[in-house]
Image (cartoon, rainbow, N blue to C red; front, top):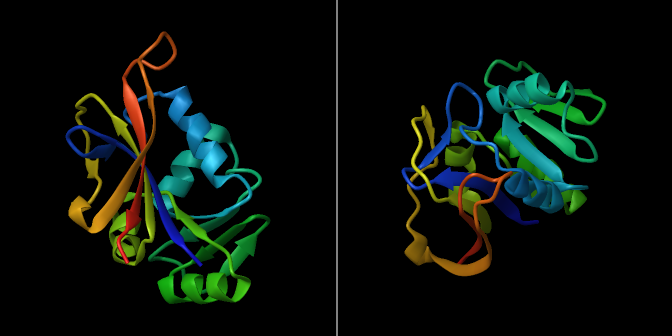
Length: 169
């Protein structure tokens, strides 16, 4: 089992504002979908409800796990499972031999970052006003592979690069 962080981060560390992404980058969303389709994704309740608000439904063709402090016990609805227990997520994923893709928000990243094997990071080359930030990471402990670069265009207003960081073993 691998634990993978998937995140888009601005130059000043912002990942969100008001429970929304502070940018609209279709190319990053395409890459996110490519990475997570058919996988098990883990998110906090604020991230989950922001996805529901935007899409009107959970992310399709993925197993959605929502980590919530207010959840009393594990419950499932279709492709969505709610839990308050990180250990239960790890145990079930280990039993199923499935990789986890952690998609936010800030508190969930903080919980899983010490356990992560990989970070799939989109660097957005702009600074934004925000209220959610990606935790500090000592990138010296990670091997970096730049996966691609994308220049701003009419649909994607900011330059971005796609990186994979693998934890040094």
